[in-house]
Length: 196
Image 1 (cartoon, rainbow, N blue to C red):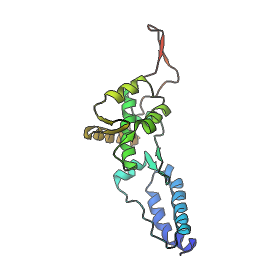
Image 2 (tube, rainbow, N blue to C red; image 1 turned 135 degrees about the horizontal axis):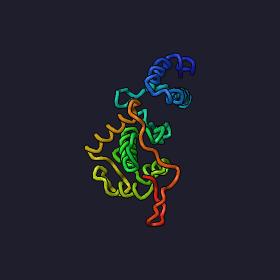
Image 3 (cartoon, rainbow, N blue to C red; image 1 turned 180 degrees about the vertical axis):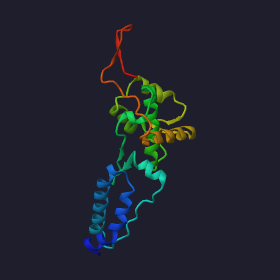
């Protein structure tokens, strides 16, 4: 079994080269996780197997800017701000968030579908977009394929999601709509409604 110093000396250049390709906000944490898994793997295994780093491509690099999978298999969505969606209004923000989330999740997690209950609804709640308009959108959008709780995008919606992802990552496009911190009052009905 190689000692940690020899293993680090051998693998560090490869790890550093990989980490440099990630967005800056992920580099430090990714380096820590890779080094930790390198040493844990060396301690747990009697025979050291080579560490295989993911292949890089423009698509993978782009996806990693908006989501990643932890060593424990959890998904993390990396949208910094709802205005980064470049949405025109609340309904557009709902569509963009859901499409981008489904596209990123299915690619990062290497699965065909995403759970509405476990992934989509919590993200809508995080961004204050979980209300009647989002229920209607999820129920009626033709680009979303539904199988009970499992959702995916059809081919046309995937293309649209990829365009949304490009816009999110394009800093030259003006920031978009953000939800109000207050609910709008609907005086005619005497009810409060969500901003959108």
